[in-house]
Length: 187
Image 1 (spheres, rainbow, N blue to C red):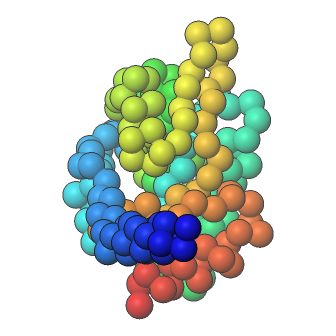
Image 2 (cartoon, one colour):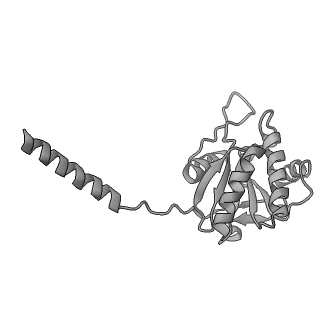
Image 3 (cartoon, rainbow, N blue to C red):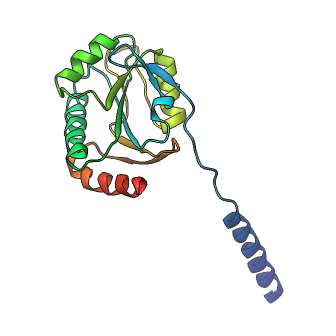
């Protein structure tokens, strides 16, 4: 009996040590180029070697998108106050409705500074659903029975290598934690 327990312990140690030696490979976002609120191409080439924050919104949203966008605007001001050069990217989850002009009008309700904030469209519904799932591991879904889109309410922090580092609630109570992490990435 003692030999069986010893053998089992040895095998467990071997398996555990083998698991510990394989580091997970760094996740890097796939290359993308979409269209921003000014009708200009914008994507990973513009974000190369930059820290950025992303979220998912749509302009016809009847619930969380206006407060999320107001919060992104407040975050934009706080980042500028702290002299942190961070790009902000809002992906529309309703691309057939959210043309560049519609996105620009929506953005203007929340900020007059689009220097570092890009609201993106220029893809199909299927493409944004796959993009959200594959790149951010989150759900985007537009039910056929509604004009409302199901999507994440998180702010995603992406590092200089295109890796999604973490996600945060969109409420201003999460800004301090988010800014601490940004400062670590930029140092």
